Image (tube, rainbow, N blue to C red; front, side, top):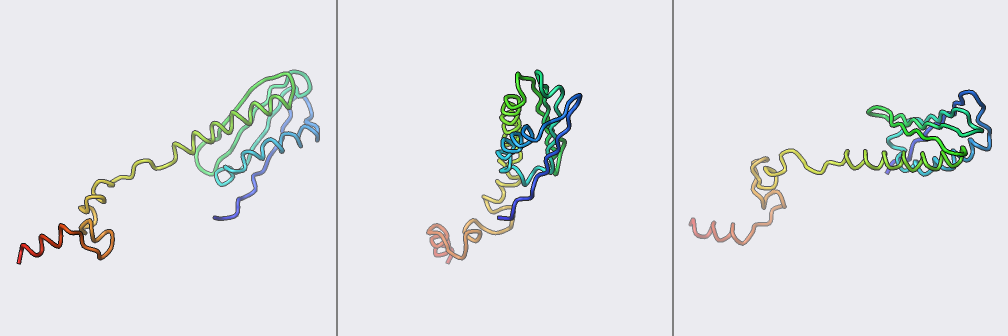
Length: 140
C-alpha cells in the first residue's frame, strides 16, 4: 500500500477570526477523515460568526469529481465541527461504496469461458475436470 498523501486544511472566517485553539480542535476531529486521504486533496472550513451561534461549512475537494459539502449551525464551534465531521464521513463512506465495482462488465462471458476463447478449466490452469476426461475417452 502506498503512503497516504497529506490533506491540506484551510480555515476561513467570515465576520470573525478562527482562533488557534478552534483550529487545533478542528484538525484533531478532521483526522478521522484521514482514511479517505487517497481521495481528498484539501478541506476548507468556512465559519460565519464563530463565537456566537456559528454557522460552519466543510468543503472537501477530491481528486476526481465535485467537492462534498456539509453545512450546519450549532451553539458552539466545537459542537458544530463534531456534527459536520460525522456528516462528511457519512458522505465519503457512501461515495466509496458507490465507487466499488459490484458488477463487472462481461463477467458472465468470463465465467462461462466464452469471453476469452478458453474453456473453464483452462482459465483455472492446466488441470482437467472429470467430465473433460470422460468426453475425451468417449470420442476416441
